[in-house]
Image 1 (cartoon, rainbow, N blue to C red):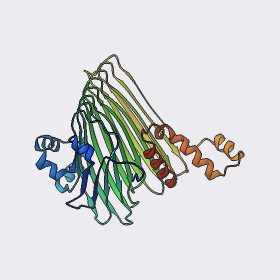
Image 2 (cartoon, one colour):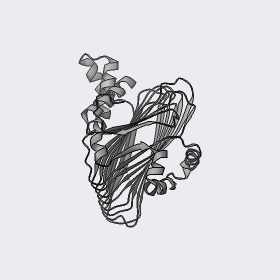
Image 3 (cartoon, rainbow, N blue to C red):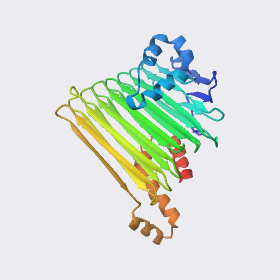
Image 4 (cartoon, rainbow, N blue to C red):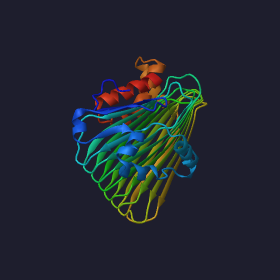
Length: 352
C-alpha cells in the first residue's frame, strides 16, 4: 500500500493461505526482531504467544465475533521486537482478500522495553462480490517502548468488515495510532487502549470517508489505570450520498489513575442532505486530580468559505475538496513519515 516506503520487513497474507509471506530485513533480524505467521509463532514462541491468545480481548458487544474468530482463525501475523531495538524503517502487514468469502485473521505484536517501531497494517480487496472479514489484533508496548501504528482499510464496497484491536501500554510507553477507513459496505471498529503503567501516553487519530450506502460504526475505549497517564483522541469523518457514521467514545479513569489527562473529540462533515453522523462521547471518572474533556460536532461545509474560494476562481468541486482536505489536515500533518502521509493523502483524494 505504500510503494515509496523503505520497509524493515513485510507480512503478506492473501485470502486464507496457510503459508503467508513473512520476513524481517537482515538488520532487524540480526537484532532479534521476529516477523512470522501466528501459527508458526505458537510453536516457536509459546511462552510469549499462548497467554495472549488465551485472553478474551473484546467486550460484550464483540464477544460473539471473537468466538467466531477463535473458531475459524486462519492466518494472521506475529511481531516480536526485543528490548532496545530502534528501527528507522517501518514494518508492513498486508491482508488481501480477493477470492474467499470469509477471512478471520488474528495478529499479535509485542514491542519490547525501550524499543521504537513503526507498523503499517493494511486490509484490502478489489472484489466486487459480498465478502466478510473478522480481524482481531493485539498490540503490547512494554516499559518505555514507542510505536507508531497505522491502520488502513480499503476493502471492496460489498465487504462487511469487523476489526477489533486491544493495545496495552506499560510504564512510560508511547503510542501514536492512526486509522483510515475508506472501504467496505459495513465497517465496525472497536479500538481499546489500556494505559496500565504510570506515565503511559496514547494519541489516537481516525479518518472516515463515506459514500453511497456505506455504514461505519466506530467504538473507542481509553482506559486509564496507571498514574500520570495521558490520552488524546481525534476522529473525523466526511460523508456524502447516503453514508452513515456512528461514533461511541468512552473514557474511563479508574480509582488509582491519579493525575490523568484524557481528551476526546469527534468532528463530522455532512456533504449531502441524506448523509448522517451520530456521535456519543462518554466520560467516567472514579478519582480526583484529573484533567478530562470531550466533545463532538456534526454539520455541513461552511457556505461562506465555499463562496470565498469560488470567488477566487475555484470550481464548486475544487472548493469542496480543498475544505475537506483542510478539515482532515490536523490528522494527516501529524503522521511522522512523509511517504506514508503522501500515500494516505493520495488515497483520500481518490476517494473524494
